[in-house]
Image (cartoon, rainbow, N blue to C red; front, top):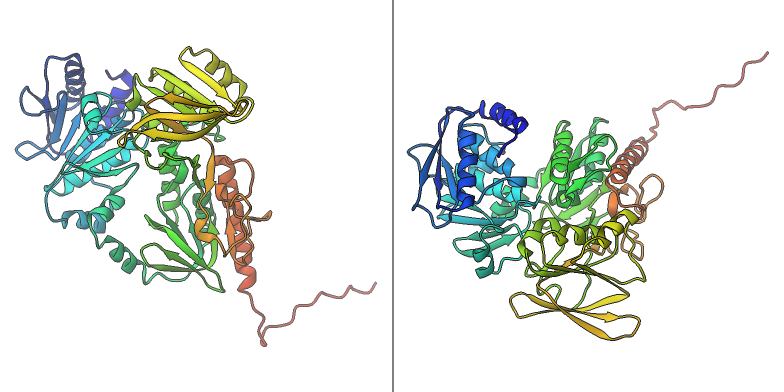
Length: 533
């Protein structure tokens, strides 16, 4: 199953293993079980520290396998064949069980160890989901640190019966002790915050004694990362407060237009951003959501957990999020048929009927991707014609299971109380309603800036974007902004990076000019008189 290059790389990684690993495979006579066994034996052939044991009756899910140390209870299990995006999760689990150090702060590790009670986590993923590995890897490492935690990662496409019975329509979906625990991308700190009711208070207390920053960046996407790097290189006290480092990039599958990087994936790019920032002396405060800006000579950023951060200058880089269509049923059936990430959730709709709302590049790309998985795709566009690039439209027109409807206004999403059953749209030519029976709706109509928390403090455009000048300055002295949250046109990663650097330089220029105050003892500066000929 592994090509020569991948085997060579994996063998190099497995050289870091310092203690024996036991993989116990639960199998039946299916083709998938044989496929999994072949993969595990291939891995074992690369190192003498991995042993594979076959069993036929030890787990209800087949094929599946656990990873642990011989003679110890294994807290990590994969149900399915973790290839695609989850291959990295498999490799990390092998390395960490085999003694490779866990990359977590000691305080976080201790927090995991101190958790009371018994925790059985189940995570449903899809192999094409770029958000799922973070959840899988977070819970795996928690199971490794605390023996009272067990985790099984389940390929939803392979275990369709469970997906149907549990009405799972979005990945990643986490269950804890049989009950839904959460959906969407989450890291170790976010999971700990949900498990520990006092986590917010602990985090706020840890932030109490932070000094006044010279520059505080709010947001950890490409714009925020660039701003932090440029500030730190000036040698000033720099901080970053972000809900999740990487921002929207974490939800991006393929990046093929970032200059000098021919092709990469969003999560990989986000990791590279964070590693670059960490190369400098930057105080990164993640899982922190800003709730208010109080401007002044020393600006204050009030966080959701009650903490207050102070800074002489601020760069706002809170980015944007998927825009909702705002019709009845959308929020009621979010993650129960209404989705915003076709790459993540598409495999859960295999063989079903879905709609895509939006005829721009994102919408047409989503329809193309989904057409290879689902039975039927109906693409709805409000305008007279699609707005996507012609090359994408040609591809779309070649697909026999895609129907395109223009001049269509979605008016309602219907469901049976548990999941989506239909969508209703109005034909803008005739004003007649049309009902389409389906199981999924993918919304792809652009972005909305994350600025609700700034209303009444900084000037916003009618679209809710922060108004900035050529240097990234806002309407407030000492407060700058960058990236998709601003009025800067063309929401692209490469533009956000440039705007982040520019806003940081603008803030630094403001900082040095506003902190130089003339004193009585300072000598007067005057221009030299021209010399006489």
